[in-house]
Image (cartoon, rainbow, N blue to C red; front, side, top):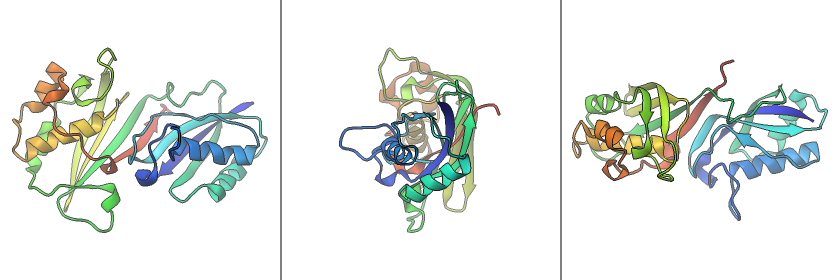
Length: 243
């Protein structure tokens, strides 16, 4: 047995998220079933992150163990020949046997895209906000997310869970009608990025005080945060392993 590392791209529109769920179409189940057809034995994928229903990925990483002696380029070709068009293998490598896609990751990078106009092309990958946003407020609202942060107030989960992380980067890019938020941290939590975006939008539309983000970080109170932003605007862009 040896370990294989996959880098996957997928359109989350028709998936009920990453993790296997009974009677649901999930990325993990689809990819595992496809791998098993090629290597002829059961496999279990371990991913860097469990994306929610509707969330996309340009650089999801997953690993599995196999006893197949197929060359990596042949395995990649075989998998892409069988996978549905909304999920693709973009890279495949043989790695050391102790590799764990989740626990070996040094950081994860997500991108959220907002559009201030109605889109036809690209509508599945951006949240169309129908009210005017102050881009200066949007940018300044997330400036407090830097270094050690507790994201409990933006996240969904058990209150006893540890929601601490280290934010290495957060940046807004404005390109015509698009407002793009990139954030990198050592780890994220259920709905964290979408909670951040929902709160930033409330500030930028003048519905909440510019100090809201700081209040949420300090109080860890999810009730203060804005609505959770729609899943389809979010994409897991990259997972770093310090390579």
